[in-house]
Image (tube, rainbow, N blue to C red; front, side, top):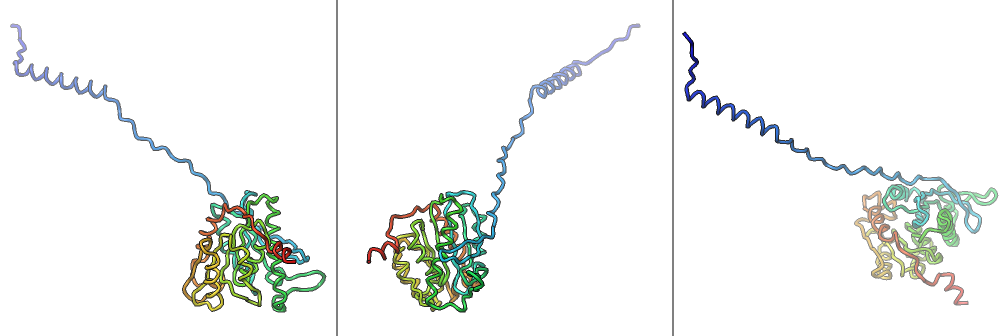
Amino acid sequence: MRSRLWVSPFGLSLVVLCGCSSGDHASSSAQRSPEPSASVAKTPEVPPVPPSQAQEVSFETSDKIPLSGTLYRAGDDTAPVLVFVHRFRGDRKEWEPLADKLAGGEKRFNIVNFDLRGHGQSVSASGKKRLDWSTMKPKDMSAFVLDVRAAIAFGTSKTAGKARGVVVVGSSLGAAFAARAASLEPKVTAVALVSPGAAIEGFDVYRPFADVRMLPSFIAGAKDDNVSREPVTSLAQMAKDLGTVKVYDGKAHGALGLSQEGDPIFADLTDWLRTVYDAAPKDRALFSDRKEAKR
């Protein structure tokens, strides 16, 4: 007796249905390509430019006095020269924090931070004579202008004369020396006076500044500093719209005193220096020319 396999119509339909579904799913899976993963382009990292290296230097004034200082090369001979002048009875350490900060900044200056004669490490003269600020009299103050001019000449020489300008920054009595040197040097493009006095040690600040008031200037002091309060106001009026003026609370004097009090003197100076970085020398009568014209 022959056996027969009987499949119900319902079962056959189920087999066919399952087979089709399975085949469709496999075909769909085979045809679907995997979605590409999103790729993010990485910006190559630019290594930071290392700060300008501080270099101990010495140079000589026109009256043969050797001066000691620190030179920071910008790596660009066309970058401006920046000369710092410390206060009387101080030394270059007053400006060292700012010089170090600028040496690592985006806009680099060729910086000369030095000790005035009789200060810091600038204490020798010709022969065995030793210089000391404690023995200096008001009649000796004009010699400090020779020091600032020597620093300007030295900094410019290190750029082979290619520096597009010179900025001079002075503190206390050094501010008056900075203004007078600026009035004598045609490449000076801007000047900063921090805690200027009217006539510290008998050295006037108003006449020197009058000769450079057409240059961009930075004028700063504490509102309760009896030495610089009135000069800051008067010099600001002379500078008009070319002056950037900062008045801080308290009675601290000089860049050193203001920075120790927590005033943002170095930050404010840094901002101002950025604005004068590309300043070009102006055609102006120099103080020496004015003296000759009166003879």
